[in-house]
Image 1 (cartoon, rainbow, N blue to C red):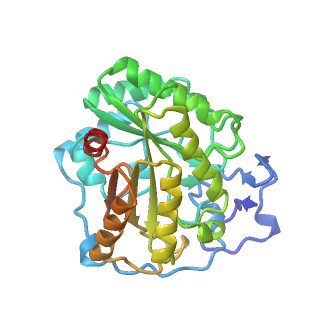
Image 2 (cartoon, rainbow, N blue to C red):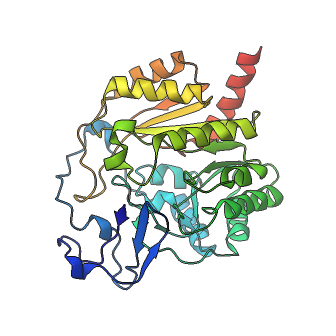
Length: 343
């Protein structure tokens, strides 16, 4: 059970710190309304501090300062949109926004889950914005994107987990920009019967759902999710659209072993996943999950070689790899790889 306390940052909560206005979403999740306190991660306030390690040279990135970066930010703001680039503190935001590539985060900026690694705000979300599909489609057209990634917060409070909203966004983009390919990075839709079917009726070109970590670490890193439910979601997406591409991602640095990662690779191949991304976990704050170690570029190269040998069409593994990093270029490579393999 995930409980989001109503207490100040750095303080250990007591029974009096929990607001009485709670929303019971499922047997697994309770979201406490903390909107009056303005806390970003209230559920982590009672956790002990984990020291943030100094980043090695291979993880350094430049601060975003380009004119193109500012122009992309203005388009996002003008259309009242959220991006995972900002909300999840992605280290690649300067590079991507300079190229006018922004990953849209739909259904608000507040997540009903409390994953230990994530920097997205947690709490009780607001109502869906009926204008959001049109706003996203307009921003995609204005940015001139040939490929766009659409992700979201978890919305356990909605009967379908937001699946219909995803479908509306995909359809709106395809209608406004027929030449634009759409990649969706969805939640797990846990216990939301029919949700994946609803999303796939809109025919996204790429369906992505990140496993994030190895099964052993789920209870501490991704407590609201279930490993095999996420695997089945990916498998079902491929069943519903065999001609489409499926994709998943992992973080390393949380205490997983090389052997555990290789087992996850095998599980993903059994689910017929086409594309695997592997990146370094970067600890957002002292209250987030502890970074156990930095994997070296050589270790990432080794993981990529192993994954390719296991049969993935595409693999991207590096310290700064993220699900939507270079997504447009990777989509072109995916199509080319399938064409080469089918000969």
